[in-house]
Length: 176
Length: 151
Image 1 (cartoon, chains in turn orange, cyan):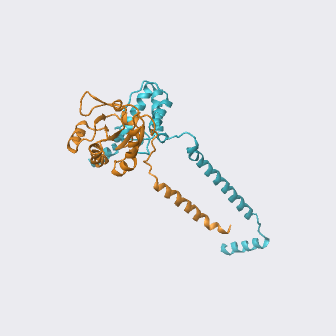
Image 2 (cartoon, helix red, strand yellow):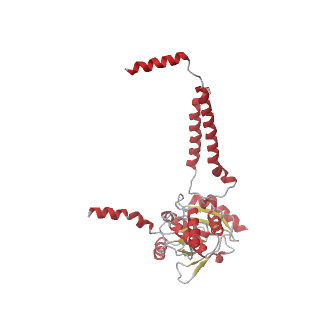
Image 3 (cartoon, helix red, strand yellow):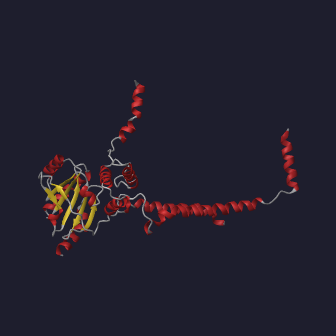
């Protein structure tokens, strides 16, 4: 019992390690349970065509991206230019889901800043985004020819994420 | 006038709560099920709140889905499966007992058991130290000390 005074020090060190690990974890980063699962089909009112719909089924046989965004989301503004680069330079088909947004504002936004999407569906009641397990915007999904979700990125899409995670996988999937 | 203003200010929290939508239920049992479910499901936007407490827009939509499913007569398990399939077990405020949650469920009881064992050994050791009884000499000394202070 000579080393009794070391007990508080030991407890303190254990706490430091636990808190240190805790600091490096991001509580907002909830792992998606939908990776490698079939993406549920959605059919949303077309933002630009009243009466028309945007359907995920029309993308069957393609490798494509779904981007969940909204004009209320600051990170979506930040990633917008990069999405335009993807659509124009890399010729990536991106379907947009405009989440809980004002239609007029969303249209205005795309007119002013350019439209990277091949189609935009308006999801006013979170029905489609809930099926994708989305809880924040922006989120980008990579969907393969069979309609399976292969990758998901939370937060703004950047050149680095695209080059390291999406592009190689996308090229591989396109060959299948 | 100032007093009236303060009294109105007291109403403010009630007014904030009133923003949460009101649903009509066919019977009390369905309403109870709805309340229980939104109590146990986590809002993913503000993660330390359940659906019942959260004002986030996603939480509103998740409450709506819960309401729709419950009023269609679907069992609680089906609502929970619906949410878990989309958001994982993180969405549950009462996660099931399994390997990854074993520490969560048993941890507090393990800590309690350790604390009880430590407490018992501590009490026992103190009891042993106390059993040395006083000698006649000690009693005499104590009486003298007490007498000195009497005056």
